[in-house]
Amino acid sequence: MAISSPRHLVYIYSETFGDVSDNYWVELPTPSDYSGISTTLVDSGRNNDGQVIAQVLRSDIAKIELKWNFLTTEQYSAIAKLFEQNLGGSFIVPVSFFNVITGLFEGDVSIAPNSSVRLFYPNDRKVEFARMVLNNDGTPQGYQNVSLHLIDTGLKYGEQLWFRFQMIGYKRKVIL
Image 1 (cartoon, rainbow, N blue to C red):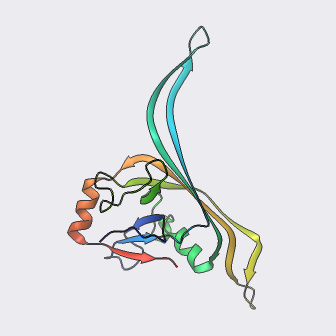
Image 2: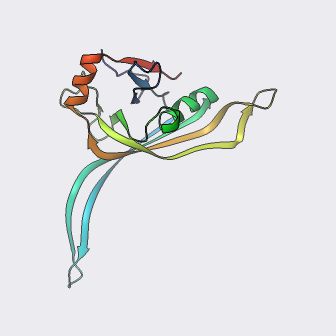
Image 3: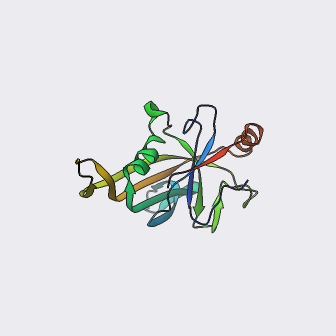
């Protein structure tokens, strides 16, 4: 079963999203804005003549910036919990995402057979409370201008992770 969908650009794998025995690719809600950034990691310095001496350590380090105009409190909580270890999440998570450089979903072997799953960690997470929508009892219905930035660790799971999925199976959970 492919994990790609025309409605979703980012999927995060979570072993503890549902029942402890389940394995899920969590489809994040389609963002209002999606920025894909590619960075090159360089070890550089200058010689005695002031010329740059550099060596590329790794290219194509991905950064993903997701922004939503509005998320319900349930949607935001489900996303935030994916990264909180004390709530069953993990700081570093496998991510399948739309790579703007290649124009392909990376980490979905059904679409890109030579693709492997990259590991990401969350950076900045932001919710604007200035325009927060409240219920009659004062609790928030949701949040506006929500953002999440994911940073590539440079590590990949690859075939071993996919073999594990094929052995134990996986399910999809959609945060709608």
